Image 1 (tube, rainbow, N blue to C red):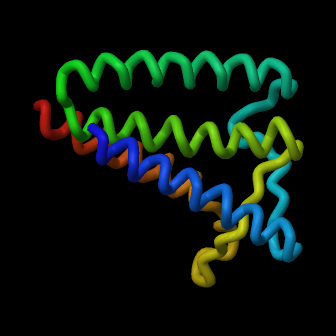
Image 2 (image 1 turned 180 degrees about the horizontal axis):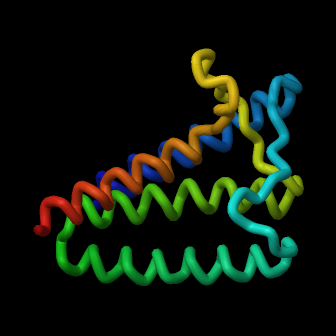
Length: 130
């Protein structure tokens, strides 16, 4: 489990450093949109905080069961979500900077990749447990 924590925290630091770099170079995309949400920002923060607390509870429970895929997935989702939530709280938008040339509407950041990777881990965990 220590490896999961080290990798997740390393990716979190990498995400924060890259966002700081692109923020200072003005090569970022300011993502003000709350996709899937048509609620005010205060309610969004309350819901996001509750979901993160639920994921933290599930992570602690998965650690006690030594479930690597579930723990890795939850930890990646939590750290990626915290980084993007940090942006929303302190800047009012998420700092996106990675754009894939063959997907013109795709602009994202490392935290988004962490969340996606965490979701893949959860899917593999579900498939494995069947």
